[in-house]
Structures are given as structure tokens and as C-alpha cells.
Image: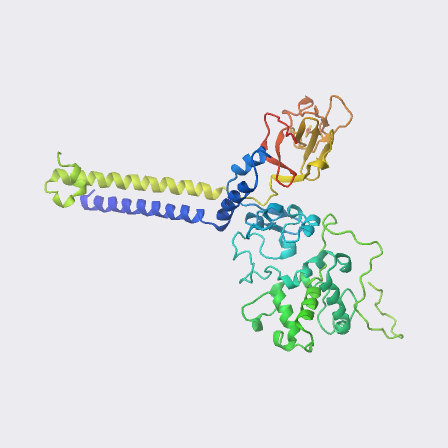
Length: 305
Length: 170
Ligand code: FES
């Protein structure tokens, strides 16, 4: 081979080799910089300070040997693989009650007692993107292309209502109030819930299960989420879904929150009984329809369900 | 040859062919090393890429409940996890309930001096400590690591076998 060609090949080798090594270096660096790894290292340090070797040597040794790894809770029946616990490491550990986020203990430990994290995970109540391992991607706030961001504080009871139909029994005041508003405003005149009501507007029995992609977000600005759609829609129906015959409701913000929570809790998704709460044997969901069917109509559907 | 050491550091001084050849040799070696390192690194990373960080499966480390849920002398099957927690006077241990023959779920045999577990599939029997007493099972039942966390819950780590069969003293 000619010397000039050989020389060129040699420099090509050097350049490729160095470039390859540099890329590997960048990869290692970036891989090591993941949020959750950083949090897990910090958590380990915090935990080691809170426990003592003398009291529980086996546990101490384990914590000492902890390496960053993705932690997750798989809930097949809900179709979720919650990786929230990769960062929220102290969520059911009372030692972390006043540590900063993401390590802090759940603010309502009494709820966790009935819904252990390792059984229920997080997204079943809180929404958000289960598989994500970044703050942004987990949809703590609304993000593009993930239509079920974490449920805002004001609407969180809507998630209780997915399984608990006896709102009063669990003290879900907003759901109770929301259902009252629904009844008072005669929403059942146009909407059907569980075979009660009229068929002017869309049926709401399974509103929570409705595909978020089926809503039009054009009038919503950046905050594209079903929850936000519902709230804004109750404030001004015609603005959010143009051409809707629904009239604006005279409700204050709190009432809108209650009504939205109620509507967002209407699910018909079946969940295995080992997850759901026991209901009073004589529990009958209160009627939401105050309409009295005309006496001479024989096919009235009113069976009180 | 005597100025070969500064040939690389001061290349501008290189006047005769000898030094030039040295320099070329060095560059060649550098090139080969860099390329080799790059290729090896890429292969290693590709291998790592093929091995998933995590699978869609429940964690092999799981809580089984507070210690006082397991009274002395009790044997508790953990639903859905195929382990049994045995608490004795001198400690707690977790034993696998998966038959070492073909993986059927074993049935704990209570009130029997010799047999602790028996397999409904092909009749293997195991002693209360998990050793094979009879049947086609090839190996004893593994014991898993158990520890107590800071909230007083027993945690089983089914990814680690407790080969020494030590009991956790609680
Ligand atoms: S699987 Fe248990 S004996 Fe064959």
C-alpha cells in the first residue's frame, strides 16, 4: 500500500478510537447523573444517619451495601408499574416525616395503612406516569403527550371514588358535596349516570375511564389534561367544547372542585376484590336523579340503581 | 536513537529520518490502542444495553408484615409469594415453597414430625428444614435472606439464598 494512504488510515484509526473513547466517557458521565441515582445515594446517607448498627446490625449492613437501582411496584390488575419509589424512598418510613422531598413520609400515614404502598403503588391514587424515573417525565405537572398528570390536591378525592362508592363512609366530603350539586343542578336532566337521567348530553357513568385523547384541548392553552378540561368546562362549557348546548353553571371555585371530583370519580372499571373496600351490605348509592317519570310511560327504567 | 525521547515532545526538532520513523511508530501504536479501547468499550456497552436494568416483575425483596404477626412456633404462608415464614424459639427464617423438581407450589404439612412439606404434583417430600426426604426433587428447598427494617417489618429478600441457613434473631 502506498505510504500516504497508510498514513491517512492511521490517522483515521486514531480519530475514530479517540472519538469512541470520548463518547463512552460522556455516556458513563450522563448515565451516572440520573436524578434517581443521585436521590438514592442521598437517601442512603440520610438513612444511615437515622439508624444505628447496634440496634439492628443486619439492616444496617444491608443499607450500607445498597446500590442505586430502579425500584418499582408492579400492580398487574391496575396495569401499572410504579417507579415513583425509586426517588420517594421514605414514603412509608416514619423516620422521614420531616425530611425534604422526595424522601418525605406520606403526609397521611393513616391512608397508607389501608393502602400499603407495596400493594397499591402510587399512581392508582395520584395519577402521573408510572414508568417514568424523572421529575418531569413522571408528570408531577402537566406534560405533553401524557394525558393523565398527577391529580391536583383539590381533585384528589376523585381517585378515592374510583373504588369507594360509599363516599360518606370514607369521609370524602368533596365527593358527597359534588354529588349533591349534581342533583341540585338537575344535571340528570341531560346526563345519564348508572341508568338514571336523560339522554341529551353524553353519558357520564364511566367518565373517569374515558380516553383523555377524546377531549378537545384547543381552548385550554398549555394545560392539556382531562382534569383541567373538566374544571374549565364547568366554569364555561361553551368555551371549552364549542357548540355545546350546556349552559354555564353558577358555581364558585370550591363547588367546581367538588363537582369535578365527583364526575372524575365515575368509573366502571372492575378491580379485584382484594383491592377494593368492603361495603356495607345494605349500601345503595344515593339517587342522583330527582326526575319523576310520567305515570303513563310503561318502560320507565327507574329501578333505583 | 539517543534523542528519541524528545522526538515526541519536540517534534519540530526532528531532522533526520530515524526520529521520524519513531514518531510514526508511536502514532501507530496510539492509533491501535485507541481503536482497540474504543471497540472493547463499545462491545461492553452493547452487552450492558442488552441486559435490562429492571424487568416488569414484582420486586424479589418484599415486606411480609410486622414481627409480632408471627408468633413463636408459627408457620405462615405468604400469599402470592411462595414463601413460608417459620418462627421458632431461636429465630425466624423464610423458606421457599417452590418444589425443586418442576416448580409446583408445595403444601406445608402440619403436625408431622418428619415431613414438613409435600408436593402435590409428583409426591416429593421435604423435611421441615427443607431437605429432600423422597421423590423426584433433586435439591433441598432454599432458605431466603430475612431481615427486619427500621419500621419493625420483616423483609424477605428472595434474590439471595441463605445458604448457611441462619435464623434471624428477633
Ligand atoms: S414438581 Fe414437585 S415433585 Fe414434581
